[in-house]
Length: 165
Image 1 (cartoon, one colour):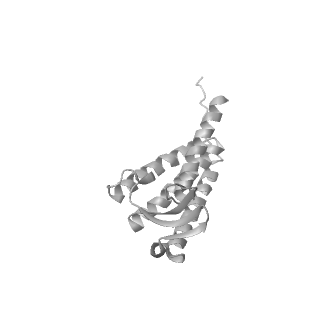
Image 2 (cartoon, helix red, strand yellow; image 1 turned 135 degrees about the vertical axis):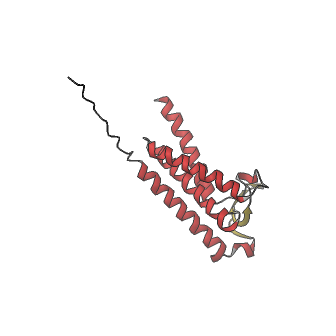
Image 3 (tube, rainbow, N blue to C red; image 1 turned 45 degrees about the horizontal axis):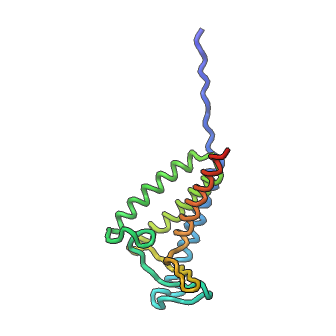
């Protein structure tokens, strides 16, 4: 009598779709805001526009990565690294079983693709959000950067919570 093999059909994570929707929303919001900054507000010509006592829209063409680090390299180096990271994150997203990790991956993916589009189209990333309070000033950044940082933060927080379980 031959042994019967049972095959387990792997069902895709229900959170995969949530991560993809987050990625799409981040990407669309990021690109829409940059188009408005560049062509609606015409920020490259104005340089800086006060919005609130603690926020300016300030035009910066970022030819490096976060906080201007690793400058001096071709935009294509950063594009290649970002594309590799997006592909790796898509694998993580496809395998994810946790909502927070899926949302985090979506934010990081959407932000990374938004900045890749800038590098391909303009040769640099469009940064424009400039927060400052009482003489303290933060680096100028954009919505894609915010989504990446929030995604990484959420993923770290989720890993601490998951480790406690």
